[in-house]
Image 1: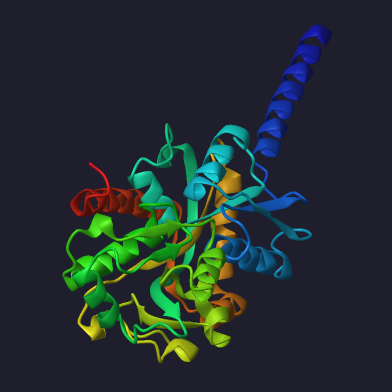
Image 2: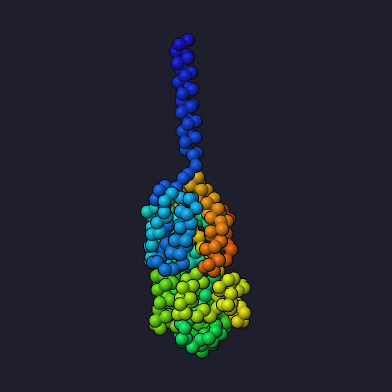
Length: 332
């Protein structure tokens, strides 16, 4: 009888231990003291802006302990950071990587060799940063049609600079606008690829190239200083607030729209709990008054998708850009 009781006690203990283990494994994820945001470019561009502005609020709203460290990792139009995330950060639940339409463009064109969208977790987007075409203050081009007329006469007459790689989203925006304006021989339009938007704008201001292609959040400082004039914003309608005076390409008779969403991906093989934590807190951050203020002051327009909806959107966008790139002649 004693042996039977001992056996039952042992069995109960084992069941309790198993239940405790399951309970512990299901405990909610909480971020570690060290959270990193990888910006796939040097300081001064859109990805850097995404990391620093979101990281600041994650800390200020007490979503994460301590500060979020921005780690700048430039190279290959985001490819260095993507490869690093895939090969070095597998399972790291305390790192987020800034992404945008520039990221999906590179994936769509096969510019990250041996890698694809399924190798990371797409967690969310927190706004859209619309494309712009800008020139130096003393440029002879007074509006977008002036610039496009020059390209129609000679596609090589206007040199552009942007923060994406050749064939990347900044480059693609110029080609979308030029195609809509009726410019021929689109691949002949010169484009200088630099590591970030800040560097590209400096080249324009210095007179080394004729025009900048990038996003509204990048040009704010150069607009305020008077160094750049924005010829057009590639949005459906004029942006609000301090950007309201900038004409759209559409109102100048050129049907070109170029939204650049701002969001994040994470490494593969993170736990469902961690992924859900990041999705929830990106939702909360997007709904906060603090983030609405950041959006207003930086020209970001409403655009919010997280979780499975965001993953589906990313994959559809990659497919769409792939088709567009073939159409324009960037890829085969």
